[in-house]
Image (cartoon, rainbow, N blue to C red; front, side, top):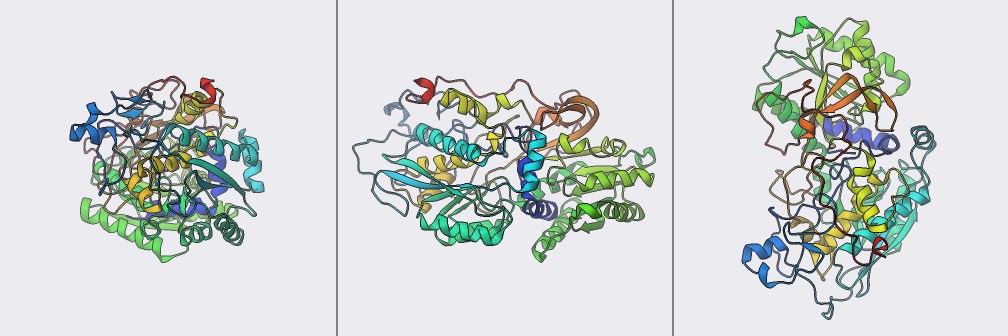
Length: 570
């Protein structure tokens, strides 16, 4: 659910995610919106031919890449679970953790190095959410598994899996499940639940409700919080260091991708993708429809985006329309928004919206005989086949945009599914397993690369030294630390892809429903890092090379025998 998240549309998307987070969970169900190995099906950093941002790595375990660099790799017995061709552990996921120099179990691991850590165990709290009625109803209709206990057990299973396949230096990871006392948006319940988690004195917690009241209490108690504060600004995340580790991109990072894509591909060029042929010879005039937010922080980012578009690329937002999310007011909002765009002579509308409003907006555009280009920015699920089919197809057939999640594929070929089956010898018991594997993966990675002296500070050092690979086709790239973004990065995702809407393509949407109209991924889902967006034209609306959903993975990670001692190994 990629989501991977300086400016406005990512900020608005983040605010929307908080406002109706349950819908986001629901419609990421059956694995279609979940990326294969990146975006919302996150993974540890790649090994092999990579770079790191370790900083001072004294006292930390030496990775295979570091041993190659200092000439000691041939002197180390890496063991049967290390793929020395790649320098990574023999785990069948994209970006498997790097091999590290084996630890001598007769050595002292430092004992109680920090709260929640003893010589024998690491205590972790796993948050079990309470589904609200809306989530339950929509989930059931979509065919998603919604049993909180089954979902929570899947999270526990992933903690066991990933903490077993990496070195934990004589310690076992013990999980305590914390059942929510209220709905995801209930700040009072979230704060009370956070205090309950704190009372358990864990090293880390995984997950949590959408309200900031949860993570603010957790990090104030100096507890590592993984998968918390998603969609918060980079400044807020940095203020929570070294405890706060969100998923996806920050809003600023998402908007930097949007800025670069629009600036390099669309500014100063004619609106050739518009439904109205009379616009094809006109230079693009941009309008922006955005969800209204409650603080000046988001408006400041919107303004910064517009300024950067003008200063870096010579582009201009002719008009901006904001609205407050309200399903009951959708028709009136659509009417007003389209009138604003049309009066300003907009040829190209950028959307940063909830997933419902585009249905009203596109219907109204057709009613007003107005056929512009549509740019899908960082939004909440507007970049899905499920919702795309609900929009006016005369309009949406002219939609292109930014894809934060990786190209879709069948559930059975996703990393989260394959690695679970590989370790346990049975498929995951819930069909939305891709939502629950990232937190345990990142927890295990940080513990592994921190070494025996585990603290929140060495956990950060471990995450920052995770090797980086190149973006994949069906997998995004994760990294942490310095060197990719202007500020030190505590979020996971780095890259993005490009998408367009094909109204004639048939296939399954993200819930498994057959139908007509599919979101297409350009160049098979090729992904771009910041600064790498091309200036040559992106082949939007060209079917050759585009893909809607993979049945076989073109860049699948290697297959390996079951992990020694795992349930699948017997």
